[in-house]
Image (cartoon, rainbow, N blue to C red; front, top):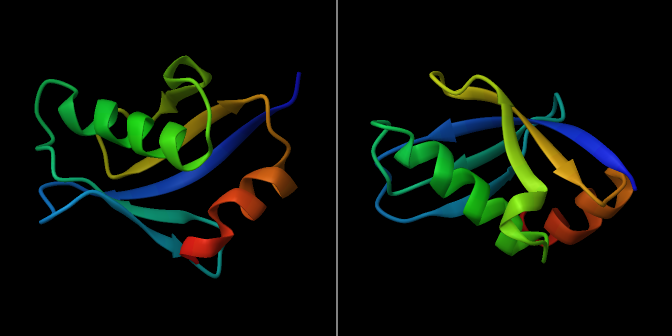
Amino acid sequence: MAERLLRVRVQPRAPRSEIVGWRADGTLTVRVAAPPAEGQANAAVAALLAAALSLRASAVTIEQGARGRDKLVRVAGLTPAEIRRRIGGHA
């Protein structure tokens, strides 16, 4: 099964949760309504990405950056090209 570490830049406490798009450096920018307290924003990021990628919630995990805005997120089951294609509409 394919796995990919995805660089994600997160803006917590946004008016709504959404995928903003890809930055020039290959980082995906997302906004989540959840606050960055007690893992709420991390859970919201994982849920948002799982829904956008049509994956089970357990297929998306925060590997690094749990306490910061820049995160490395593990996506199980998709190749980098599949991730780009599925999120491409948001870019």
